Image (cartoon, rainbow, N blue to C red; front, side, top):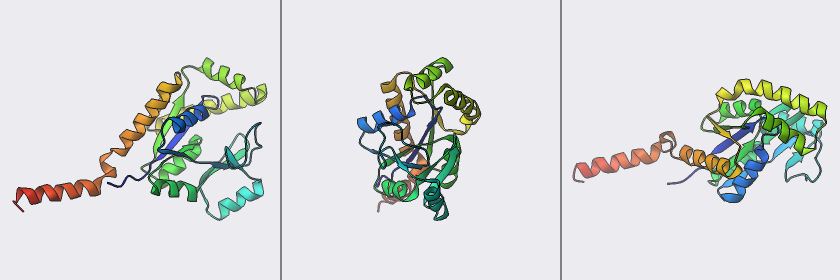
Amino acid sequence: MNRKGILVIVSGFSGVGKGTLVKRLTQKYDQYALSISATTRNPREGEEDGREYFFRTREEFGRLIREDRLVEYACYCGNYYGTPRDYVEAQMEQGRDIILEIELQGALKIKEQYPDALLLFVMPPDAQTLLTRLRGRGTETEEEIRTRIHRAVEESEGVEQYDYMVVNDDLERAVDEVHGLVEAQHRKISRHLDFISQIRQEVKAYAKGE
């Protein structure tokens, strides 16, 4: 059986630890490829163009949109983010499961185009832990943190549109839980209709003594 890759969408509130979870997942299991998003936001300390993100100007990002080279794009906290189409589809054809760490708007747009995509929402164990993690990053001002908390309130209204929830309390447990959900998605009947049809025909042939 040929194993085609799955699109795995990982979303969650800012500060919930999505990036850490996804990074550990790709380290622990070699079947995953991490999609690199294009964004108009400025790089944080230590980030490099082409590694964490493709950092683009608003003019460059607009060109990507016009040329239909993004699977999805959305504005989040004043900056644009988008997923390059060619990279995503090439990885899936090679049998790799591609992880997209994006926000709710983009996730739902991708689900429209790729109905077999697996949507996972990462939650904190409680709201206080989320606030502590945001402040612990040391990358945003208090005003920016408040903006992200308000955004989390909005995002919490859309969680029901995802397939599964993963609580990021213990990192290793959360990583293994995500991997288990991806493996279960690979075994969905709808992904193996050709194989099932083949087995059905072979069994019928044996039943007839052929």
